[in-house]
Image 1 (cartoon, rainbow, N blue to C red):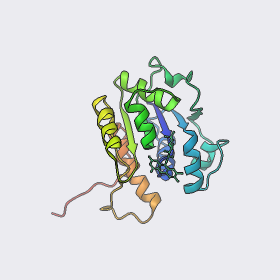
Image 2: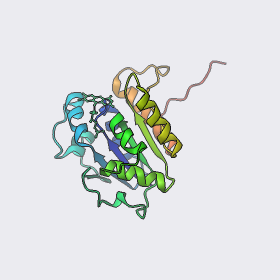
Image 3: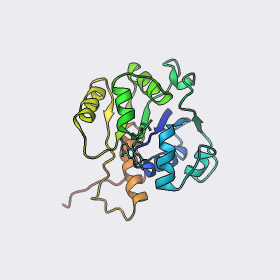
Image 4: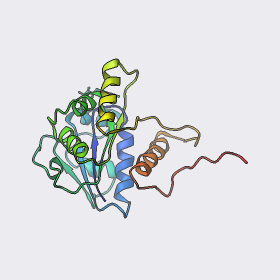
Length: 196
Ligand SMILES: Cc1cc2nc3c(=O)[nH]c(=O)nc-3n(C[C@H](O)[C@H](O)[C@H](O)COP(=O)(O)O)c2cc1C
């Protein structure tokens, strides 16, 4: 699998860190294109204490990446900006309301928005893990527009029935749901079983 992962300036950087870690260690995944919006860097610094664009992947993975490559959000000539590049899908985690608006309205004005636009036009899976609360009517309308165009609105709403002990575990289980949805079920995923 070739996948694209993007992080934007919404709260929830820990979700993206856990997603990148899971994909790096998944043998079914051959290549990951990673794009961080300019505004995500501010949130990464606030929430994870990770500063700067340099060595961002190393800092998030805690190791040298073996198959994840970072692309600049202003490089609209990157491979993933073209439908001819065989990507199997894109996950934006977390997805800000600003990036949602750009995608829902087809702006294609950054690599993230363009790659999402390409993903939709090629009818490939696009998961928008939106994060905001509460939603205004513009947010709701844009989610509806994006869903009508083929995106999956996969809000950053973690589960509690698995009794997570910390935010990392909560994020990890949420990532399991995201990856199962894109065809990559994870070995450590919690499965609810009702008592018999
Ligand atoms: C600490 C912090 C948390 C934020 N959380 C959210 C959020 O949860 N959802 C959201 O839509 N925007 C949030 N924002 C605002 C976005 O970063 C801002 O709208 C930005 O323009 C989004 O740009 P991007 O989509 O290009 O990354 C947050 C900003 C900061 C600094």
